[in-house]
Length: 308
Image 1: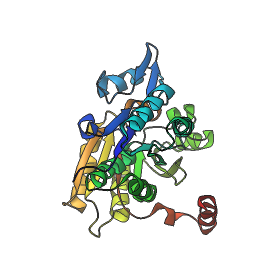
Image 2: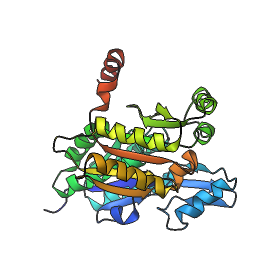
Image 3: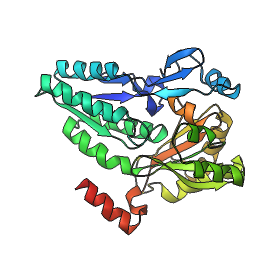
Image 4: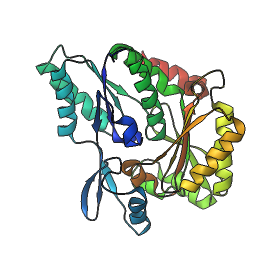
């Protein structure tokens, strides 16, 4: 069955390039800045992952920026001119202004192409869970979902993408404004390996801590055991690493002891996300329970009002 729509995705999905270089998929690259100038987050085509993270170990403190407005506008224009319904599955608005920029540019383009079937979804996640969702979105698209159906699917599916990631420390995330100073200070004072996740608004949230990396990996495996969909759901699990492949291998071994039927996709954490988490980050993402159900009653009411 021929695909009913095309996709636009961004480099914050952190998937291997060969998984996303597909017909009908337009790629947008975020950017990062080091002491030698500006670089595109190009799925490690211009620099090896180890070399990127080694620069950080040697003192580089890269900053990042969203996909350029010109690149976003060009992607929308290509989609409009093609006439094929197209959906942009966008990195979390809770961590980047990329989504709001895309909203504004899409509105402008609609003035020129009022009937263009273009759609935009704020995934409210990034990196490993974004990659998980995009892999499944590609499968759903190829199975025949229309653009409108894919938008509806993604807006619901984003809450079932479970994730946890461990970082060596929280300093880089604090410098980038991704977490409050109080959270970073608490993590440093306790001398622990923080475990983080995405809340349902697309922001980072501290979900646990472990004294040492081995205990942290065991906690991530326990998180999978508790939250994954064991009732015939997708067996795919994504494990990302920021230049710590041995940790990714160790986590895979722990998961295999729990469920030998899973399919593990290991991938490198890209330069945009890597600039903020630093070397040593390891992450897991899988399909599981509805993350909205973990909210307090008061928060669920507020979220329902906002959606309404």
